[in-house]
Image (tube, rainbow, N blue to C red; front, side, top):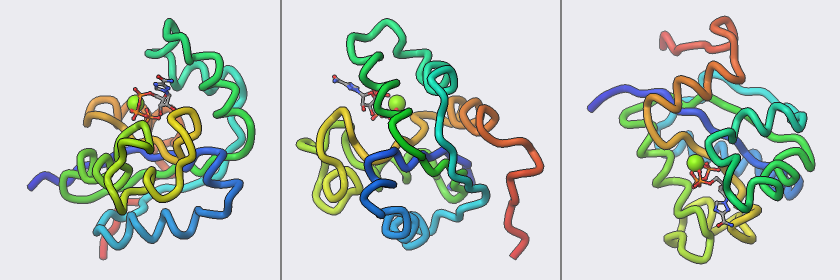
Length: 143
Ligand code: RTP
Ligand code: MG
């Protein structure tokens, strides 16, 4: 088993509904360690840059509008197979298709407002972590 890092966002809908603690509990209960964390209110430019891979998609404008509609929590999660583990905790992009007990099944209202983001690969995780956190802000566990 590889120890990986992944990048996670609790999106504006879940922050607004006071689900930060419940979602952090899911990460920690699954053995993922929160090694960096902060609240930010994304600018339009930050959101467009973060989701640049989707810039040609029809939902891009709505995605940027939603992601800038309120503060988000951004965090780095570390643990065994963290990228896939977090995707499993999150569930499918569309909450209507998300497995029972996943974050999106429990906390997301729609595919547009779907509570959480998680990196889809180790490479994108590294890029996304660096997009939001300096090296000093990431605190690996020594115990
Ligand atoms: P995320 O990046 O936010 O973790 O979500 P994801 O990997 O599960 O999905 P992705 O394909 O990367 O899409 C990013 C976000 O764009 C919105 N989306 N809307 N209306 C649509 O067909 C559609 N498809 C994607 C979702 O909010 C998704 O989380
Ligand atoms: Mg994605």
